[in-house]
Structures are given as C-alpha cells and as structure tokens.
Image 1: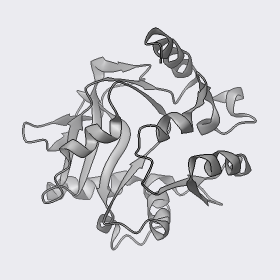
Image 2: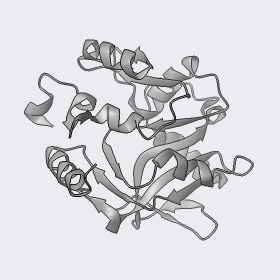
Image 3: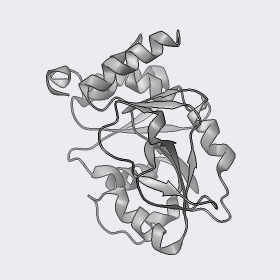
Length: 209
C-alpha cells in the first residue's frame, strides 16, 4: 500500500465512509465472538475494536495466516470458526450467510468461499481453485479465494510450529479430501493494493451503497 499505510494500518484505510475493518465485520453476524490479530501500528485499533466489539491479540512477530489462527484459538472456544481477512469488499449478498448455507460439518473440515474470476474487480493474477461437482476444492484457476472460510479448530492439532501459512493445513485437508468450496453469487473486489481501493469506491458508488 506504500504511503497509504505509512501512518495507518491497512484495515483502517477507508472505502466510502467505512474502514476495511468495518466492511469486513459487516459481513458477519453481530452475536458471534470476534477476535483479530494485530501487529503494525497496533495501538490504533483500540478504539475501533471497542466500537465493533472485537477482542484484539497483539503479535510481536507476524505469525502468518496459520500461526495467527493457532494463536487466536485460546480466545475462541468453538469446534469450528470463521476466519477472514480485510482485503476485500463484497458486492452482493451477505458473505457469512452464503458460506453458512453450504456448510456440511459431517463431511467438511474446511469450507472456503470463492468467487468466479470473472466476477472479481482489481484482482491481480490468476484464480486459486476449482470446485468439483460435489463441492470438493482443488488447486486451479477458475475461482478466487475471497478470504472467508469456515474451518474446524481440530485441524490444528499436532501442528507444533508457531509461524506457518494456512496452506500447511489446507494441503493436509486436500490429501484427506476434507476441504470444500462454495461460490459467492455477487461480485468481489480485491482491496489489497491501492488501485483496488479506488475501484471498490467506484463500484460502491455505482451501487449507491
């Protein structure tokens, strides 16, 4: 993000009248416990976390996506949890509800919300996955991971690393056939780079959101 994040952490950058953090939280139900990991300029999160009822966890060292999830488990007492990042703007139905409708815990250890690449804005690069007819996920190029998933916490059992990517867990679930995907029916904008912020703003204005 360059100069945009020189004095402001990325989740507190704004699109429209809301921060990226607020846009992300708007996709979740108000009554679930929310935990967020912080590192860069962590003190700036105190006020927004209080307003949004988020429990903050400070990482002195960046633990990556998997390590950050493992670190948060002490504050999340649940068999399955939602994980998400703030690098996205959803343009359509509620992302949480889209994911929950497809969740089948008897056969799934993880369910990722993806979006067809042709329904993305500002996404750099190719897609991440393909989805089979039975909803099983595999590495591919047709759909993009939106940053939101449901994942069972026991998939982290036996992982003794503190710094690791979620791909370590996903790869294990691919081998076991326990990772699935469902497609978001709306559009999705990647706001992980400056141009994405501009495009997301234009899309929200066009939809009068």
